[in-house]
Image (cartoon, rainbow, N blue to C red; front, top):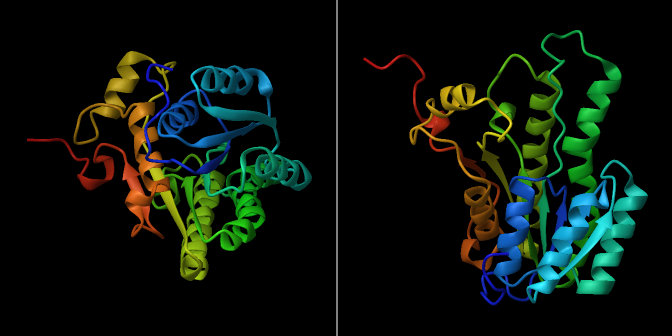
Length: 257
């Protein structure tokens, strides 16, 4: 970590992160640790999250690594119980476990692939919320951020299952905000735009040129936004889908004159 732990944006928060990928997930975890959160890193493999937890702990923070498949309710329940018993009651959740189904470009779906898409992108999020909301209510509230996608709002023609799962995820987010808001619980979605480093430079530039800033967002920019939404600084923001895309969907995509 580049910065020592000691900031206070997430002081006294216990953050459960489901899905800690190499881009937005890891960036968010590092920023949250710098801002004072105690963090449980949950992922299918311990390969990347154990070194990240060790990095946070060596910098003076507090983190644990938990092997967990979000499609397995028993594993999720165990990971959440371990978090509560080791770090304290969960106050914050970042759901960042994605699955991309690029094969669904027609209505002739692959049932198994379709079910996997729904299980990871939507049902896993639902299960995490169901298992953590009671503890949040007992402790006076909490905050969720779900990594969603504008694909749930706009047709891209190549990821039908992904689009349906993200639209469903956003419905879950609004439901949590509506039903549990009076109990002090907030929930928001984010729609990020970050080009992975393995994308060829010319292709990445082509995509980035579509937004207002003419560049891709960085994992750190997404992480900063997520941490803000999990913090008390955003206490009035709930039930929203927040575009973190450099204005990609705020402009018309016809050729400029």
